[in-house]
Image 1 (cartoon, helix red, strand yellow):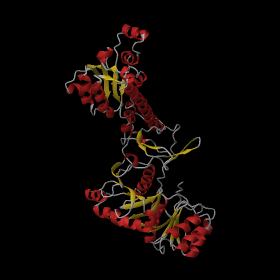
Image 2 (image 1 turned 120 degrees about the vertical axis):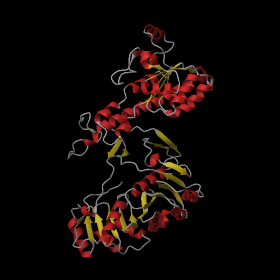
Image 3 (image 1 turned 30 degrees about the vertical axis):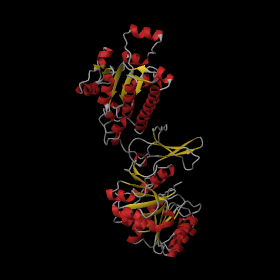
Length: 534
C-alpha cells in the first residue's frame, strides 16, 4: 500500500451484523473475532453466530432497549446511529457520545430483506409484501456509508473474501480506499432496493387488504398504468471490449435474476461482444415462440433462417437451408438441449455464438475444437417493458407478447386456407413478429423460405424476400407484419409463388387488397394485430 493508504487505515473494534443472506457469515465473523472485534447482532443472525460458538452481544444490550413491534424496531436507536455517525476526533461529537454513553461501531455487515424475491412469489399476500420492506437495514447502511471515513459498510457477501484478506494483512484494519469503495457500493444497494420497492408498489393501483394476494386484484377493462416515474437501477455485470463499433464504449448491466441473456452462463469461447449479446437476445426470444424443437439463425438481429422439427438436428437443417450464405458468421438460438447429432452438423458452419438451455457432454466435446465459438446456457426470462433512448429522454413500451390462435384468425377471401396452409401461416406470423419492419416472411410449415426485412416499402420487402430465397417459393405462404396499403405488395407475394397470406388488416384499401387476393386465388386471413419492429 502507498503511504497515503496506510495513513487511512482504521482498526475495526466493534461490528454490527444483521443479514438476511447468511452465506459465508460464520466464516467472516470468525475472521472478525480473531482480530478481537466485538460482535453485535440481531435476531436470526445472532442465533447463527451463537450456534457457531461465537461470542455475540445482542443489539438490545447495546441500546438498552428491547427489540419490539415484531422486530420492526431494533436498530432504529441513537446508540446505533450515534455509534455509526459520530466523527472520530471531532471534540464536539466525542463529548456528545461520551455524555450519552454511545459506543463506536466501526463496521456494519448488512444485507436487506429479500423484497424482490417476496414480490415474485405467486399469490403473495399484500401484508406479507409490506412487512418485507426493510427500514432499519437501509438506515444503518446509509449512516455507515455517510461516515465512511470512520466506518466500513459491507452489503455484499461477495466482498467477504477480499475483506478477510485485507484484515489479515493489516492486523484488523481497513484502508480508506476500501471504505470508500464499500460506501459507494452501499448507496447503490439502497438506491436499487428503493427502486425495486417503488416499481413494485407502482403496479398496485389500490391497496388490497393485508391477507389478500397482490395478484388477485379486481380485473379492470382499463389498461395497466405505466410507471409514473421510470426507475432503472441495475449493477454492472460485465465491461465489454466495445459497443457496436470499436470506437464506442459498452457494458452489460443485469437485473440479477440469473435469467435471459444477461444471466446466461458462458461455457466456452471468446468474450461475448455487444453485438453477440444483442443477436443472442434476438434469436433466443424468437426460439421461445415455439413449443416444438426450434432453431433460429440470426444476423444483425434479423432471422435469416428459422425452423421447427422433430429434433434439433432436423430444425437446424431446415433453418440453414433458408439462407446458408447469410447464416455464415451468424448467431443461433435453440429452445431445446443440444445433443451430439445436432452439434456435429452445426460445427460445420462458422458461427459466432449459440444459445440453448443446455448442451450434452458429447455436444460440448464436439464444439470444444472451435475455440472461439461462444456457447451459452440460459433460462427464459419473463417479458419486460422495452426501453429506448431518444434525445432528451426515454421511450417505454410493453413487450410485444401478442399472439393469435387459429380460431382468432378472420378469413376474408372466398377461399379459406387449407389445414396445411393454416399451420404454415401461424408459423410465418410468429417469425414475422421478430423481423425488422417492413417485413415479409415466406414459409412452409415449420420452415422459413424467404425473409424480406427492414425495407422502406412493403412491396420492396415482398420482392426482396423472394429474391433472397434459395429454395422454391412455389406453394409457400407469406406473413406481413403490417397491413398491405395497396394491392401491389400482395401481387408481388403472389408472383413469388405464395398461395396464402396472413396480415393484420385495417387499411383503408382492405377491400381492394381482398379483391386482388380473390382474383389471384389466394387465401388470406386477418389477425387484427400488427407487429411493427423498429
